[in-house]
Length: 223
Image (tube, rainbow, N blue to C red; front, side, top):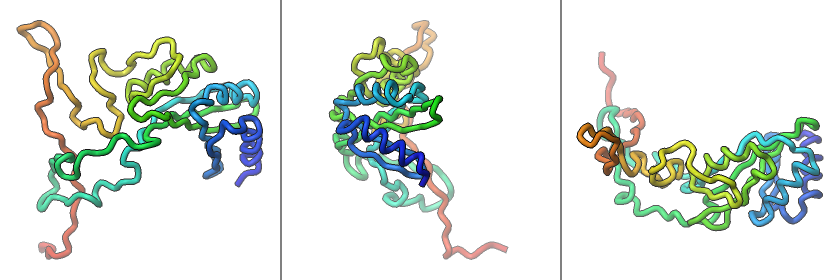
């Protein structure tokens, strides 16, 4: 483990104090988790006191069903290499989406002057309406990053000057990168020649997933 990363960990711990929930180093990369109620002030200190003047990225993470292995819980098709159709709700019951620490906001910070990097995580307290403080006032470039996290994950950023969708349509329903969002979406759209406009309708296709190749040792090779 590099001494420079250990020194950075100690410096950040001394600067942020009890705002840090946990701090860990893996593969010589430092990740710091902040308490959500102190995230804005702590991130401000990282920029002003420790020189992390550049915000590389802000993204959302959904940890719903994190660690589950899909193909260990479902049987493969009996023949061929086709695609399988599953009704997940009927097969395994409704997924509990109200789990603690389901969502996280991840910040990638860079100090150009000191050539140091740190990853910062903040877990919103409320799973049903996840919200953290906006950092647009600290780094202007966070504007569109936070809008993307809101659009795709439904994470709210308190204090954002213009929090609206940025990638999906104005009338889009839901947040497509949430793990409980259906693969086929909620609605489908088409152009209606009679009405002369695009219309939205309920989805008419089935929810389909890939079926892995199954090797059967009980079948003798041909030839």
